Image (cartoon, rainbow, N blue to C red; front, side, top):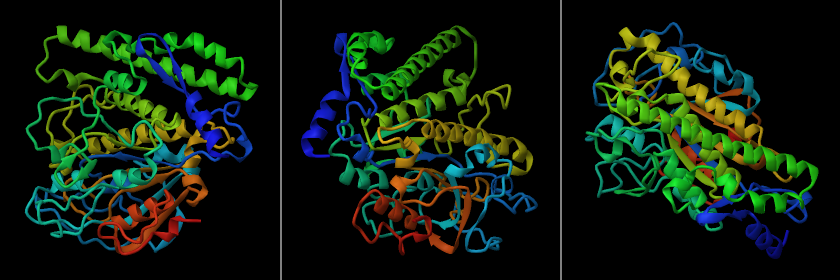
Length: 454
């Protein structure tokens, strides 16, 4: 495909409607001249889960281990025997991992990756804010945190110039009663001391992505561009018309989800409740809605790099985990008494895994112009900055990878265990290389994670 073809595609990927509304289209074969040779762009996305996991429910082979006692705020290493052999083996479907079983061919469990804790700051602040930077401890003299430019922005420096948004930062924390610093509630940073603000309100995300100027116009964006859309639809082939209709249906669903959430908020304002209003919003519905918006942005080329922080670190404000508990619960408070709440905490871990599985499955169903899926051209990572929420350990982190990275990553369905002491930054270096960056190191990496490459 030559540069002229690309410019034609770029001009045709937005439909304009009244009131300043725009709707970006997915890649369509009828628009992409020479589609047989068209290769979808690579994308990178991160799904960050706060406060670690209950190891005995998450990790294969640890179901009989002792429930850890609260270890305080010092962080660091929890010595544990390495129960797995190095290399690949079949995934054992533990209670927390079980939601991934139906999409097992798309996911790889990665164990044995570590980070180094820098003494002097709170363990939760570092595990979230430094997750995607993993800078060498004490190397950055201007910060109490080992915090540098995060992976998403490093990658966007290379791949973000051709998209309307170099990166997009999503957060599923709707609470406004923050008593913590910004380091507990952000995983994306332009650099030391410079946070990349995340989007938390689905309506504001929608208006930002689709260019709506009027606050009332977030509803029925599809109506505003429908006339132009029908005109374009007549030019599409049969397969593209199917993709086109599926895409518009997904936008409609997002609009309906936002309207439902708006009605819920209106009802809660009239109720007499003690907790903040956001505590009663259904958690899974909110996460899926933000995830749907992220997927649309990646699918249509609005961005190629996105991060999604599922919840903040150490905040005690409760959330409504619908279908799990009958009232709002605080994830962080439960994590400090794992012996008492171990079963409830495991349910929270599984709940967050179910939302991740939903996003992976949705990506696997989105076809691109060359017949591949969105999941085929993405590097999508689930992870947490703690290996356990009670012990606050920084080693043996829970990491899951989904997607094929444009065919550069091995197929899923396997559990890869790395030797003890392998830095998490080795994974970030490898992902940067998959995205096309020519570099031999990232943060405190010691080399590439060649095991995940084809």
